[in-house]
Length: 160
Image (cartoon, rainbow, N blue to C red; front, side):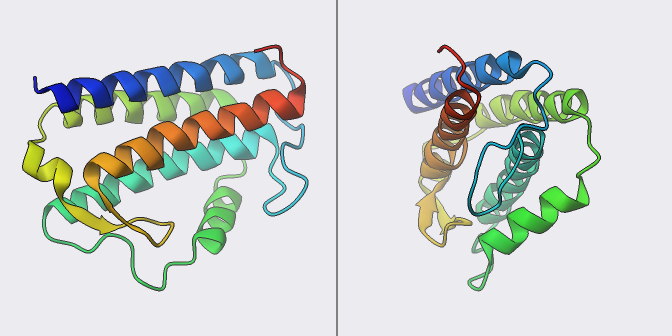
């Protein structure tokens, strides 16, 4: 396996471990608000967001690899996040975590099939930036999970 893939997998696995530690520490506090502004999500809603985001970003990357542009130029990330979480608001934390874990395992397996040329292909990320597939994995997955884990830890006063 090429060294870029190995490094990406290590980064993704480490970020997921950080996220899982934060999620494990939530305990019964899934209805505790994590954000006081913007989406004002609870821990459960944030978990649902991560589940939706993970599968959505995989789909965007797959479209880029077959010549697509990524998300549409007029993509409204805030509206998408809000509506996608609302649509799945009844999802139990254990179901969301199971789906998130399954999509993570599928992502790691899929990553092993990519070439350097594919890692360098670029498309529009939900943030509006044009990113390579490698940048999607680092920014859209690893960094995204680490940041939300930190938010959970901070909001719930979890000892890290």
